[in-house]
Length: 525
Image (cartoon, rainbow, N blue to C red; front, top):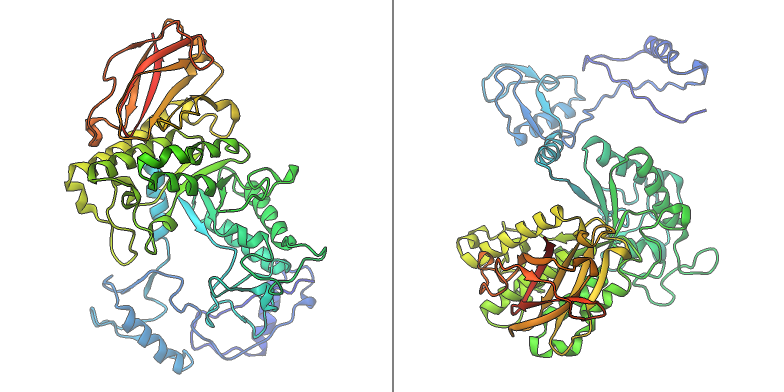
């Protein structure tokens, strides 16, 4: 027997139900319930306005269509509620024609759905930041929802986040897990978003997350893993994969937990992607350093390639890195104004050519000077300056290059998509590698980086034997004048591949490597 509740609300706001209404309701329910005798009917003579404003985005007059001030609407609603909703007549101030609160035009919250649809029409996907790890402790929310710890763990050692002063869902309760999975599907199915970025996954996986000894409760086996949360994440990803195919789930997970982006069938958590927080931390530390010291920290660029294919990674330069006094991406770069922009352009070039999907927080695409401030808009006025327009143009062209060259995306999460050419030139802070998009030699591009302000000429690099007799041309140079650079490089020259051994290859090419820049080459005829 189901314990579901069906609420029947009469159309007539002054209707008073009686015992006959119960019989009519029972007859109506026989079409849905096999045995109507199982139904318990509770007749109440109190009717309240169900919609308190959370389920629509605007109100307009039913007579003239003019927008209605929500404060006026709220006052009218409160007055009607005081009279137990027996009189819903109102006179909107717009046209003075009498109407009913029921007859006003309530616009449902379709605005966000229209936004998602407009993005799709322009070829843009939409990911939603989804937070099942914790929820606010506000009394008007889910906290102590029925006077007890209904959604949260009752024990504060399990149910309270010390870092954020929030509550933790009781993942061991079936109803809570179903509520959260249903919410995930709600955004994916109702609004058509393309995926969910799941926040603070690390805090869900470990019972001792950010807790000292004695401040947490071990699992049934005495361990620190939150078995209920792990089970929830697996189940959520399985159901999303089945019910919303084509969408993606992305974990913001900062630990070395194995298999975050591996299928649950092989013991993974089932996410499609995982944020590569290690790449972010290492590379930002490297870029902050004066180039003269970078030779001693070369491993901060190369280390990520030791584990780049253990997960399906996203390279994140997120909101967390440009708030709370951390400064903007541009402000993190060393040197004078020109060098700051050159460093940032090189860093973006490194990010776009490194294996992994890309995430760049707003403002970074045009080198905003100040860190992000949620109380005001982005500093779009900076685009009047050529150096900021140059960074914007670079990000545009990096996106186009990334999409147009399979070598930069087809094997993003597979070892076969990457090969070092030069990883050990710490003395000069230069690096070179191949990105591959398929088995053929011409399915590759060559990426070369120089993280010092020193021009390097006649740099010889080994290339695949399949490039024998070919000529290389620049696809992108972050030092191009188009991007605000010094325009040093190889220009439109076709660089001949020569039978000179280098870096373990029988063939090689000599290039000009501009200062503080990343250059991408492609082999042609």
